[in-house]
Image (cartoon, rainbow, N blue to C red; front, side, top):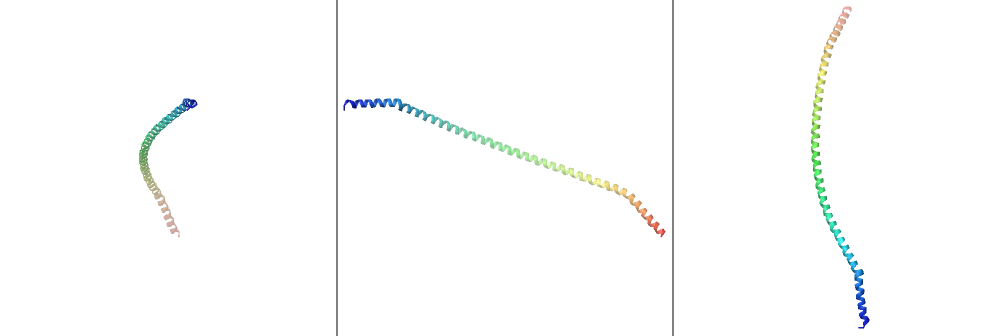
Length: 140
């Protein structure tokens, strides 16, 4: 072992220290910082996914409740509409029956009046026919 070998070893150690100080250590720190940053982002992402899942569950519950309320409101409205339709039908039926009854009464009254007017006319016509018939027989 001569002196150049020791100088080469010292030179290698010095090179290794400088390389470590100038390149390897900063690169290692940058990699560790980047890994910590990525780990933090993954952690935040997991928290956001959990929060999104919770919010989705809440939204689903709110939508289900809204659907139940809407269905109930629709059932109530349908019942009210059905009741209103039946009421309108009954009222229309009653009005139609009253109109028919009024029409029957009007027809009966007009028929009676027509018969009363007709009686006089029929009597006059019959007398005229009888007088003509008897008058013709007397002539013949």
